[in-house]
Image (cartoon, rainbow, N blue to C red; front, side, top):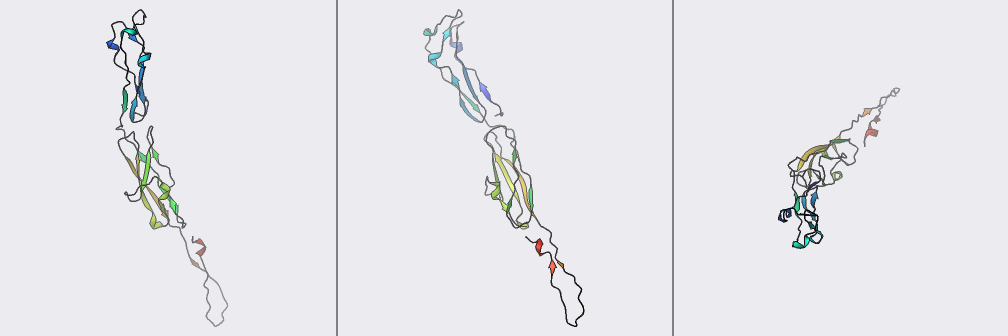
Length: 193
């Protein structure tokens, strides 16, 4: 596998013809991704054999044709995957890493999977969420492509950051009354989620 279309056009049988004679046989097997590709060869009833003068001598042969196969195997080239970290300030809502994974495949379908524990995997990154600061975690990422031998791996973080809240007691000035006086108001509650 190279990522580009590959083909073979060679065939055998021409050397069985009488010296100076040739055929109109054409053959090609082609493909890009890993797999087995059956070629296309001129059908036996369409093959014409001529001598050096261009005379048709096909009737002197019992002709058959059979296509070959092109087999494209997995490459040793390394498949890679990256996923950026993502973070959100705490707001009481669940969040997932919204970044897009980047892979380097030349062709084929790459499957990217995600896990919190390395045991249970999903292709849906949005299903791995964190709500509280303590829920922050490292996402394990793996990618596979049928054209590559290796499984690409990486990690990315999903972080919930703490938000700052400051409670400030109110200040006030009151005229002396001889009785205990107090104030109980403060600010900061409106900063909570």
